[in-house]
Structure formats: structure tokens, C-alpha cells
Image 1 (tube, rainbow, N blue to C red):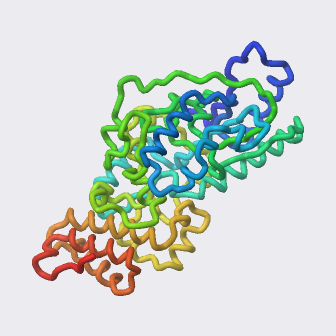
Image 2: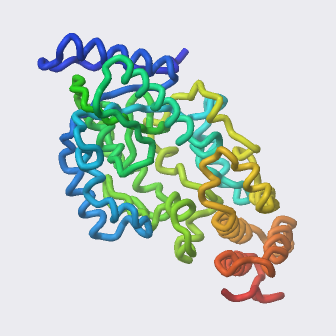
Length: 388
């Protein structure tokens, strides 16, 4: 049976003190009791992370995520974010659902090939991970405060400009893969990251070497060619950005490659060989809710705004709001319609559902519905779909 957790200490450095080693061991043991999958400790030397960020921002690859530009270099300077910080405790939390079958990756690929199915990223099908991980890190920080009474101690879970992959790699939790996500040989990449900043001089863990070799499957598989170079993702082309972060119209040239993905995209992780070893979470929080692992596009299109709010309560999906949810579904329905033939029952159902929603749609949604209608077979022959 594969273990649920793999929290273990890495070899100590010569400067480690018995007190520091003992405290770190206690932190790891308590983290395991809380359900965290792994703990590491990073110093603040982040190598070329700053230069990488500068180039990425200069090229505008952050898209409309203005906060990335606004935070600037504070994102890779932990001392500026929280003065007095000497170490960052990094945490990994596996999120593959407990009920994921042995062939879960094959099943996910099959759903992507069924245009009428709605595909939500695995991480977003259950409870909002921010809530789960934030609570566990707060508990761990409380434990540390009782044991050591540090002057600087603060937990972060996507709540501040933290270079989480750079810190996690520095702390030995894994290495940065070519898709820019953290990878680990015995856990793949299906996990969340969180951090605790502190002034405790805990023994820092050593980084581990990359094991990507010459593999470029993640780059080759990306539907929108968003991984423009190894370790560089142009957010403006990434389906996760388009379906979650972007609050305006989705560029037309990127709509067809989105397929039936309506919230996020897992392709670069599904194709990664190391995710054969992704760990199933023991936490029920990450079990799918409201059949999101098997819903069709038309079933989700039937939700009204109140149903959307009720069924995404406590979910990461709620943050995109009703309008973006419908926008994403409209694009996916257009892509599904393109895969049908004129007169098919599915084509007729999509046509009827989109046209029924069009008169009351806000301008942003109306434009995407109009585009979707133009994708249906025979759209330009029998009755013209409305223009944008």
C-alpha cells in the first residue's frame, strides 16, 4: 500500500544545532498529524528567480493580472514582504481525490475527447483548497508559536506575492518542471503549496536535482501553446488564465483550442510521466462535489445564477462569478457543436439552449453565445447566427 504522507527530514547541514533539529522534527511530526503531505525549509537565496520574473513581466506575459506588476520584485524578495524573515517553511498538500481510480489519467483524457462533457480541473472539483490549506497552516503556525515563540511568523496560501515554486524548490520539496510547476519523483505535481515565513533559524533543506531529462511532453501537449519556452508560461495563452483570471472576452483564436475545458486545464500535468506517482489525498475535502467529475456542458448550462452560487459555495470556482462561468460554458458549447452534424440531437439541443439565453445575456456573454452559434453545423445556411 502506498503511504499517504512522506514527511521526512533531509540530511542536516553542519551549522545545524540540536535545538534547531529537534524543533524541525517536531514541526514535521505535527504537520503530518494535521494531514500535510510534506514539509521543507528554505533560506532566502532564490537564484535567478528575480531575473526570470523581470523578463516575464517585461514581455507582458502576466496578461491582465495587474497585481503581478504591482507587487513587482517583492514577489521574489521575502524579506521585503515580511521584514525580519530568515526562513520559509514550505508545505505540500496532495489533492488527487481519494476516490481517483488506478487509471485516472486515462479517464481524464477520455473526457477531453467527449465534446459534450464539461471538464473542470481536478483541483477545483472539491472544496476550495485555500480554505483547507490555510486552516492547516494556521494550526501549524500556532504549534510553532507555542514551541518557539518567534517574533516573525506568518502563513500564506495565495494570499500575498509569494514565489511559492521557487521557495518550494529551494527547500527540496521538488524541482521546477518545464511547465513551471513543481515536480517530485514520488508525488508528481498534483499538490498545493503553502508557506510560513519566520525568523527562526531552522536548518534549511537542500534543493534536489531536476529529473525532467530531455522530456518535453508538457510543452508539446499544451492546447494553446502557452508554454513558450522551458519554464516559461505565457499566461495570456494559458487556458487556466483564460477561464479563471481573464475577466473580459476570450481571444477568438484561442477559443477552439480550449475544447470542453471550462475551468482550468490539466493537460500538462496529465501528460507528465511523473504523475503516475501522484498521491491520493486522504482528505474528503477534495472529493468531487455536485458531480463535477461527470457533468455535461448542457447540464451545467441549465444552472441559474442562484444554483451556481449554491453549488459553488466553498469552491474555488465561485471566485470567477456567474458571468465568466457562463462565458466559459458558451465557448465549450460552441466547440461541442462544431463536433456534431446538422440535425444531430446534440446539435439541436445546443442550438436551442444558446438561443434561449441570448436575449437576456449581458454584452460579454452575448458575444460568446453568438460565436458559439456560428460554430454549429449549417449555422450559415439555414438561419444565420447573430453577429457579435
